[in-house]
Length: 195
Image 1 (cartoon, rainbow, N blue to C red):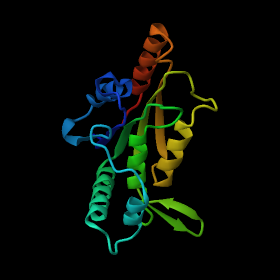
Image 2: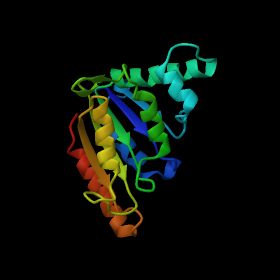
Image 3: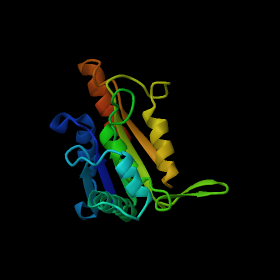
Image 4: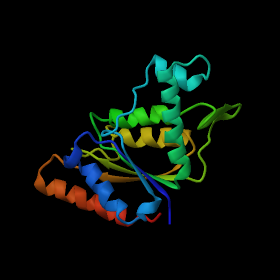
């Protein structure tokens, strides 16, 4: 059985469709092999000068900066302990939630999760895959307005997670019938994914 790290990023709490789809999917896994992190319920620091400095240097750090590095180390350890990441990534204003971006900013660390070489960047996470559950109010898949898919493929690949499957629940704000079809489509897609 696969060890899973699940990330929720919706700000909508109990009304979140991405979280509901994720929760339903997670029932398939051994709960002892599962780590769930709700990035909205437990917000992470926003990348600013102090945070960026802490993640790049180990010298002369304030207590707050040392705490940021320790948190980043914990988040990276959670990824290292998992075989698969399952990420709930609703589309907000054509991109991912700030909460998920904050997580990315804390786990993408030069020399720790990626390195620069003469032939380009090499991601340092190994033997991991990801499933991204993305919910949208409209229909964006395979169109220019879907920046979520290429962005997450790029950033996950950057740290070494190149096997990424996307599950789409679209048309969720386009009326009852299209929304129901969007949710059912996502459930069918998830049912077809084996880890």
